[in-house]
View 1 (cartoon, rainbow, N blue to C red):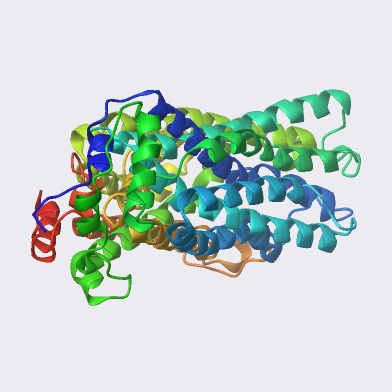
View 2: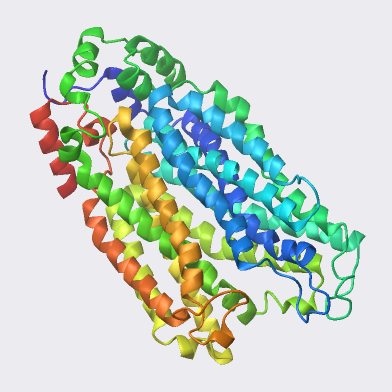
Length: 535
């Protein structure tokens, strides 16, 4: 087989000008990610309310809060489900096709979003068990959306702007987080107006009106709407040409599908196609020596960097409460009623998303095909390391009231460079560098490693950050190493992420087949993959 042969239909996709169908694909895949973010992060808006409703203690000076084990389950069960979904649906996407599995994950997200707001019984145990059960399966559906959205977008995009298109899908996460805050603001305002109540310190029981039990359910159930609205368009999208041609080995169908999408006449090159898709040297499996030789270091790079990034990214709840109280966004719980507390938390999440999260994502979209993935990821990890250490070493200085504005600025910059950095690139690169028949699987493995990091960041560090002094720990938590030492550890995690970035190849401006070695013979494939590492 001649070197650098590529199917004409795939070449046409690579050189296609940016058209309406590209933006359609971004919106369809992006709305899935919008929903993912809304569903994953909206739980943080209502956990305080759940504590007030179901764990109120008569005569207590402070409102009820979720016990540590319940809080960990409610917040973490969706992350566990997401990890499982990324592995399972990533594998299934390579076996059954992107389109078929894409519909399944969306249906799961819609049904489980609605079911999350329902309860069997009204006891604390019954409500929390039901909530955790359905949020686990919601997480499984969300997990499936990660590899499928990324793979579909990468396989539809042209090589010139592929990075921006995949990053744009991921950037919808920022809008999902922001919309969660806005929905909480809208409904808490309505409830606060319709059902006025005194603050907790005045009337502990009356500060949580019975109707507040509907508020958290509505906020969770609204997550079903954007996913349901895009189901029809997801099912209308044809299967990606790369899956149809290179995995299903149906060149004729792939050519017909893309002729309609690109609105040009394409010819099915049967002879070239037979050579490419039936070459036994290009049909190695995930656990083969050929995969290990060609992509072993790449997979190590994508899994390790995503794992390390998410440890730092999901640990932000360590000092978010300090930030919010420092700038007066969230007053003390006893000075608010239950519904007003939801309003304050929603406002804080909306402002953080608007000022830090959303801009970071869209900076990546703007610059990823100019600077390249490698440079953005390296830069992001570098600045996250610098700013995390800048917070950690003089931590006692920052927590003084007069210095907290500087603390807020450095905190914002840390997570701006997470989003204009590895939080976006770790999603993009695994969708580009692996062969079509393993692309969704390998993206799912990389994403699952990330979610394992998220679990470590969200819960391991929640315990680690507790004060060394037993009398100063949060209720129900054992002593830890303190916030300062936890932040130093996170700075080290970011530094290791920067080092591991050198295992990830630059993919800017290259075709997917060139990166994965699917359009060349065995000898040339090895050199092509090696060259992509150096460029």
